[in-house]
Image (cartoon, rainbow, N blue to C red; front, side, top):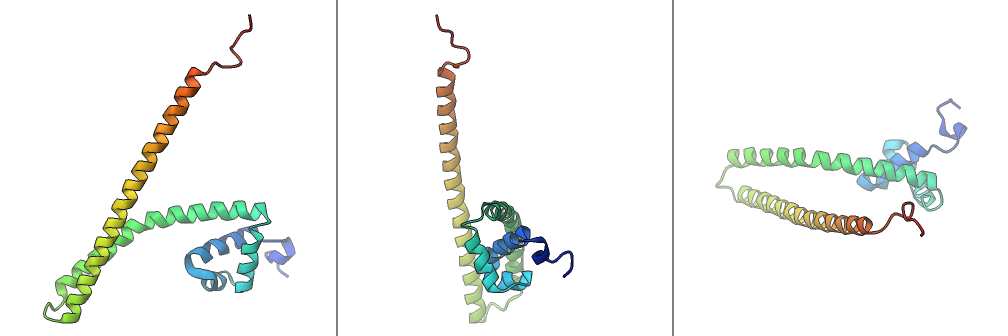
Length: 154
């Protein structure tokens, strides 16, 4: 076995965690193919999350990173899709019913995406407002409580 073989060095936490994160986004089969393992390995590693705090910690960290990276890619992808649809609509034959149907469908999807973004923005704004209010209340309570280290007994 080579020195890089995980069986020789023990369980490969990084590989398992990354495969589990990839399984979230591309399914078990896709993750297994990408990492050169079987889907049974993916299932076993997923079950191991329940009993192995180290694997859970690494997986959680990698999942958080992947989600942050995914959200960074979302806006450029949406803009590229809009640009493509614009060019397609301008070069399409407006007398063909399938073209009209396709463009109308794309427009509906774009409107749905916009509505979803507006809903998310509103919910996040409300969440942030509530979190700020809770923080302010906590700070006010802490400001009014005496510090036990500075209280003197007479």
